[in-house]
Amino acid sequence: MSQEARATLTADGDCLVVQVPLQIKRRRGRKEIIAPSGTEGATADETRTNRGLAVTLARAHRWRELLEAGRYATIRELAADLGLDNSYVARLLRLTLLAPDIVETIMEGDEPDGLSLARLFDIPPYWPEQRRKWGFPSR
Image (tube, rainbow, N blue to C red; front, side, top):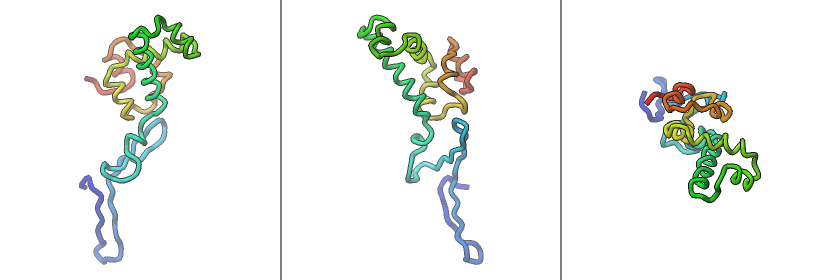
C-alpha cells in the first residue's frame, strides 16, 4: 500500500473505499493514531510530545545555564530564588546528564512507553547504560 490516502470505487460502483495509512502507537499507556505527514489537523509532534517531561527537561537545562553563567553561585541560592527545595532543584539538574539523543527523542515525543520523570531521576552515569535502561536504541 502506498504512503498516500486513496479512494477507489468497488467493482459494482456502489461503494467508495477510502484507504488512509495510519500508525497506531502506544504512548503513556494510551493508544494514539498517528496520521501520515501532509494531512491537515494536529501534527504528529503536537499529539505525541510528553509536554510535562519536555518542559521539565528545558527547565533543568535553563537552570544549569544560570549556574554556569554565574548568575547563581550555588544550587541552594538558585532554589531559594525559585522558592523550591534545593534537593528538588538538584534532582532536576541531574537531568542535564542525559545523553543528547535521549533528550532529543523525548522532545520529539518518541520516547519509549512508560518513561516518566520518576524513572529518569535514577540516571546511570554512562550514556550507553541510559539507553539500555530505558529502552532507547543503541548508538
